[in-house]
Image 1 (cartoon, rainbow, N blue to C red):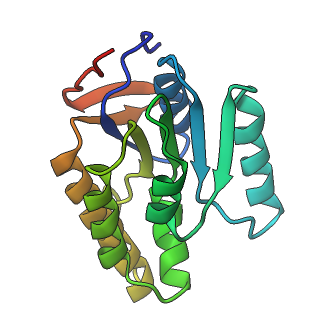
Image 2 (tube, rainbow, N blue to C red):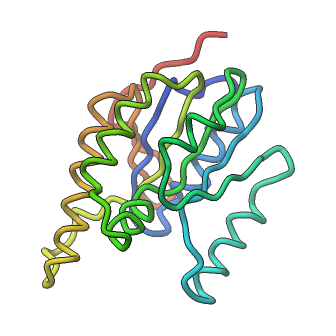
Length: 182
């Protein structure tokens, strides 16, 4: 459980599939007093993905305002930021996939995301899948994806005050969190 008013200025929450990272991130955002803003990067490619999206929507209550942005994440964050709110971005690995599928450079766009965090007026909680713990993928596109995601995670972890790694629904604090001032 996350205590009230402890949302860090910005944070990165990593974990494997079904590790509990999204629900934990939602608790972090709901732990602050202002508006809860959700940025969904997922695209509905098939029925199974539609079911996953619906599951996430049902879990969030009426306190949440949702924006769907599969590509232009930085512009979306700048547009929707509120000094009294907290933004959850779920998830960065889907965003990287979307960028790759559109022929955009995830390294360039990731650097823009990292740089934009300093300009935002509210905390941002970023959720992403840690994909670098398994075997080396056989095909180039999968290796490129793993490398783009890994580089993005490293860049973000260097600038955000809080990094949490989720394992079996349990948060492991990798980098200490900074508490927002009231």
